Length: 422
Image (cartoon, rainbow, N blue to C red; front, top):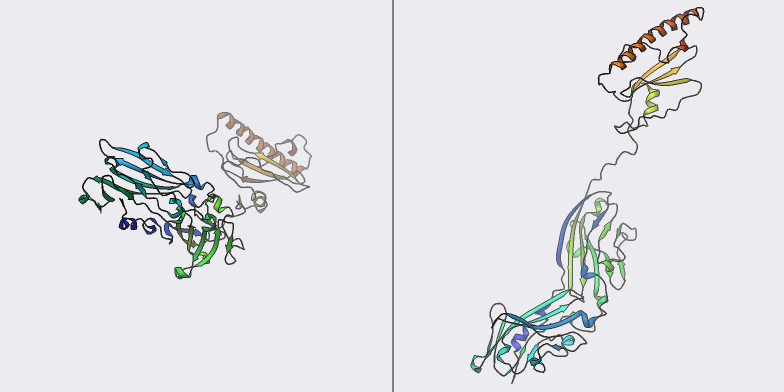
């Protein structure tokens, strides 16, 4: 006698295992960026990677397992089957006694049929469905008890699973039905895989959102509006190769503010996901100066123009390139051993010399050693003699030859007080 339980079978119709086609929100973010910048709204899903299910026989599989608690806990494989392959029964005692319909992957009926029930059939049976291409794994449990009295046969729900109490020696069907399209043959998955971006401006209802782009795994693409044609918005051409459907928006403007949604649909695998991004555009960032600031060293306009193009920093080199006009004589005298105090002098006609003093960087204020102090004293005496010689030479115009000539003196002709040039 073969018993069927239509009431239990109803529990395993497509509605029990099926999924709604309405996309589920899996991610929501608030993003704020300044105007003029570039925004990248991420949308990734490895399940949307396009690799055609050419190995259908190995991508889908159903297997039944049974677990027992006595005499000790154990889990055994009863049988398994994949499309286009014969079902495999693992226990020799069960061959010809336990089976599932050969049309399981055509009509979605994976119920387990057990003939001539014995006491050792008692246990918790699990129907497992695996779709490796879609990365979907589903299972359902049914507990089977065996009795010798026909009056004790019954079926009920214990709060976790269905429990069937059957008569010893009878036949029973453990229902497992899933009629979702991905478990059946004859579908073209590439024609049912699509991704699209929508834009909802502030104050606009969701059902009035603008469609930006549609992408199909078959290679078809539909752009809506001028934003993609003008390259302001972009989605990678190889989106289905890597599962990356991120939206790039260049040169953000205030009118780009709003709600962006990435919708991924894999009808073949039953995948429906939605990612929402609320984009806010703030004020643009101040632009950095394109030219270095002018550094005025003193009130001399000619020297300011000379050094303004050189940025002064702690690590800058201590060499300055100076371009001087023709027909004039120049010299540069370093005044201190430890420091960076320079003197720029201009030689003028009739032996007169004009001196300018420019401090490019503060010199070291450390105390000088005794040898250097002696040199400064000598230089001060030489300056006094040269000042006397210069005055006598200019007044007498060469009449007294014993006095030193101006050109025989050092090039720094000025009064020196031992600390700083005047």
